[in-house]
Image (cartoon, rainbow, N blue to C red):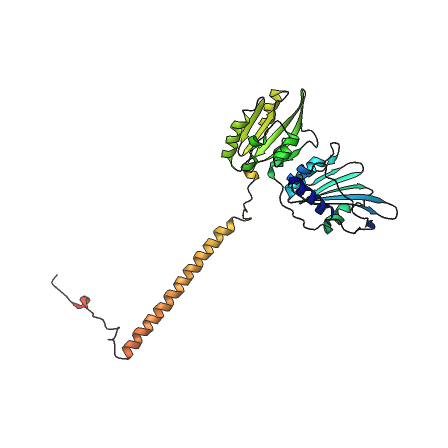
Length: 326
C-alpha cells in the first residue's frame, strides 16, 4: 500500500503545473518526468508536487525544477539535503545556494533549482507565478547550531524516522520519540582528531526533554546535554573534550521563542488611564448638577401647588439680643 501511494504521488506530481509557460523571453518546453531518488525521504518531508521543464530563448536555455511541500519546514529540510557541499550559501534567513551553473532557492513551502543560462531575475519571475505559496516561519531550532568549526553546508534537518536513519543512524527512532513531537537539527563539526556530528533535538516541554536526556545518556559513547526543551547529543566523538566544549555552546534562551506583541509606547497606557479617570469624574459632577437642579425644581413646584410648606421658613433664636448678669 505504501508503494502504491508513492506511485500515485509521483504521477500526480509529474502532472502538477507549477512553472509558468514563459519567463521573460524564455518559453517553456514540455514538462519532463522527474524521478525521486529517495522517495521515502521526500514523502516524510511532505512533498506534494514537482515539475521540471526546459526554458529556451533564441540564444540561451536553462532548466528549472520545482518541488512543492506541505510547509516551509519540509522545503527547508530538502534545501539542506540537496545543497551541494561546495555551494556558496547566503546568510539566513535567505535560503539560497549557488554553484558555477546552478541556483538552489527555498521560499516558503517551495524549493527551486535552476541550471544553465538563466536571466538574473529568474527567481522573481518564478515566484510571482507559483501557486499555493505558504510562507510560514522557519523552526527556531536551526539557530541553535554553534557556528564555530561547523562544516559548511553540512546541516541536515530531521522530522521523523526516515531522515534520522539517513543522517544519524546511531540514534534509534524510538529513542528520539517522534511521537512526542520531536524534531532535530544536525550538523558536522571539524576537530583535529576527526569530524563529529552534533544532533539537537527539540521537544514541546522541558520535562519531555529531561526524560529523553536520561535515555540519550544510555547510548554507548554518547555525550549529551539538556538545556530547556533541547537535548544536544554527540555519539562517539573522536575527541571527548572537543565534544564537551561544543555542547557547552548550545544554550536555550526563552526569549528566542517569545512572539508576544510589546506596545511601542508603554506610557500611552498610563496616560489613557488618567484621561479615563478625568472623564469619569466630569461625568459624575455633571450628573450631580443635573440631579440637584431637578430636585430643587421639584420642591418649588410642590410649594406652589400648596402640597408643601415654605422650605424657606426658619426658626431664629436671636441669642445676641439677650443680656444677662455680668
